[in-house]
Amino acid sequence: MHLQKSDDVQARPRRRTPLIAAVAGVAALALAAGGFALAQGDDSEPSANGPIVLSGEQSQKAATVLDRPMTKPDLVLTDTKGQPFDLRERTKGKPTLIYFGYTHCPDVCPMTLSNIALAKSKLPKADQDKLQVVFVTTDPERDTAAELAKWLPAAGDPSFTGLTGDFPTIQAGARQLGIGIDPPKKEKDGSVVSMHGAQVFAFSPKTDQGYVLYGEDTTWQDYAKDLPKLIKGEAP
Image (tube, rainbow, N blue to C red; front, side, top):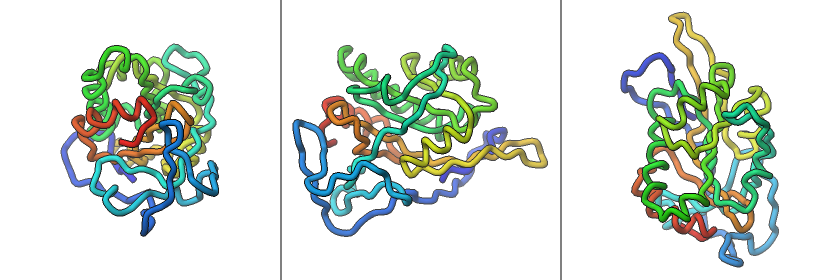
């Protein structure tokens, strides 16, 4: 969980609460048709506690491969042009990164998008065109379609998709991935406190399942190393 006062841009320690439960032992995975699929007992419904991840040597990498792939959130929100955006339909069959955050975030959100944008710029043009990066606001009251349209090109890349809508719908979508977000709260000093998970989920173009996640400490070099494989639906 990421806790921030959006009006305070001073660097300070962040309280980080892991949202991902690691499971001891190596889980059974099958690499089918170039994309990840469960070898047995395929269950696309997310657990109440979030995704289960592989342990062992996988924990030494920036990428965490999920033991049970996650279903893409069933979300219909509003894009930066003010048009309805069906997340599942519009990203179907495309390598997709999804991140929940907000434009007034002083550090982690813009850094995450900047790192992804820089890594994306290192890809061949054809692969850049395939990659879908979706930013879903956790602060929709302030993050209107117009605000996202203005902020995203500067924080990340003009091709990134920004989505807004009503908070309960966004919160429910995040919960499908085991990501916790709370409504922004205004403090007595006028600052706004926003809490949200800081994971980036990668979805395979072959299965449309979320099979890899990244934490807030992932560098642009980490993304640059993994993106060519993620675009193909392969293990990073």
